[in-house]
Image (cartoon, rainbow over all chains, first blue to last red; front, top):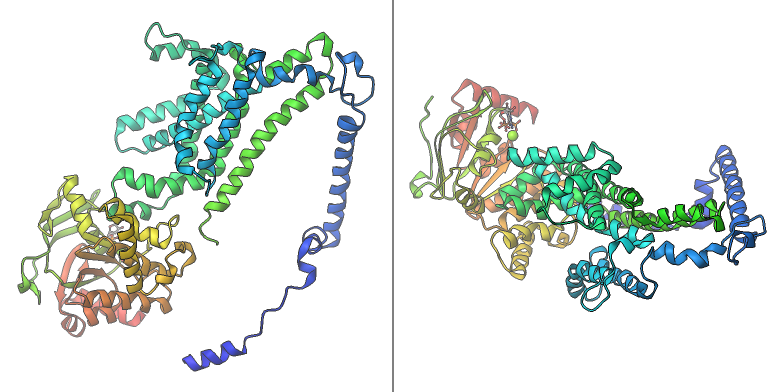
Length: 369
Length: 258
Ligand SMILES: Nc1ncnc2c1ncn2[C@@H]1O[C@H](COP(=O)(O)OP(=O)(O)OP(=O)(O)O)[C@@H](O)[C@H]1O
Ligand SMILES: [Mg+2]
């Protein structure tokens, strides 16, 4: 085709027209997705009806018919939920047996968590460079705040409990299991047989055992790796075991991501003279981790919910405290209310992680934009 | 088998690549058999031959993407041994362009180009970016610098891959069938860049079946079969007057398929 013919064709192109009204906006969306056909409309209507039944009866129970004040379950007289316990027990649900006068320390540690996470989670965070230093210091700051020292009253970890315990163990496990998982995944692919075999033995033996069992035996296993007279704090012990457990899963998730990277990427990196570690860090891992995001977040969510297993070694997380309350004569029979609240706490955290992973996947998608 | 070396520009100085008695096996499979090759600086060599004849393996031995079991390879005075320092030195001197581009999809075009200069050559970022933009201009896609590889056409991607290699300021460029993954209408834009590069005096080893390119720029065409260099000659001589039966057969197949 000559240039002239090409230009003539260009000039004859029709101007852009707005899309038909029936395909844009909420109405258009509903029409194309929910009511596109007779059968689709029926399914939509049935689904709406079922949703209505569930939601309306829940709202009736949880809000409209609910009692909210009183000192024991006999104060609750209506058919609906009894929320009277919350006032008395929320402290324990959140902070466990932490001294009441010191709970501000937990609150501060919690608030500081957000600036510590922000520079890693989002782009364009103001002052990100300084915040990153703060993030690195955060584990130390949080430990001092929670456990005491530097002038703060010491609070032993057997006082830790409630949701604060779930968050402490969960976050520590999440932050630690990712790097350990990466190291294990790389170790499993190593050309050095010793490293490869050690990685495989660790991954398979940890993955092959339920976490409960690991927690049970942790007081037998861990001392083997420690000097004789170091007694391991029980919260630290849980964090170690939960991290070990999640790392093994993480390693397999990341190995899947590594295997999805075409050989050509390694070769291009090699041909340009990048060393093994540089090509891993700059080329391979960024891509492998991106592919692995759903699996990694899945592991995080699983890990976070597994923090309820601390009950095994005598710690009372939010679920343990809820269990105790449900069997307390004052509040006997309030299991629905109690577990709804527990579920809500977990849901908020897990759902946030899930949404964040969707956001991250979109942000890292380099095929569009 | 020994073949008379016919190297038109061999008298321009010491060879920049010297391969002596190269043998390589994949397991029991003898993939390269007694290869002897000496490449003069600024020489442009086109390597052709049937599929599986060992063309890729040969050029991949030059930058140690494959290791060899017997023979010596010397690149720009550095002997290719197991010594990682030598391997790194050679990889800095030798650029490579692959059939499947192998751009890094998570980095922008510009980042693809500056990564190795910054991390391997320790070039300051601003300087690396300025040089990368120069090269992107040379391959005629400066406007794509901030896009991701996945948003470019195959021809554009391969031109980025060439620019990316050139950013390391190599003395030697290896091309492994750079146009055979491209749609026909994009082959020319890539070949144009390669012709330009050849005219600038780059030492080039090009595995390709683009015979037009070979006759336009090659100093020497090398024909490989079953892991051996069967014949090498000037493009004119090779295309018009092939010596061996195998190269005659190969040329007739290439010509009939084009
Ligand atoms: N990593 C490997 N392991 C085992 N055999 C291999 C490997 N790579 C290549 N081969 C074999 O070595 C022979 C030469 O391969 P090579 O890729 O060098 O051929 P080629 O001339 O480049 O062919 P093509 O035109 O198809 O690219 C082929 O028979 C191939 O199957
Ligand atoms: Mg090949």
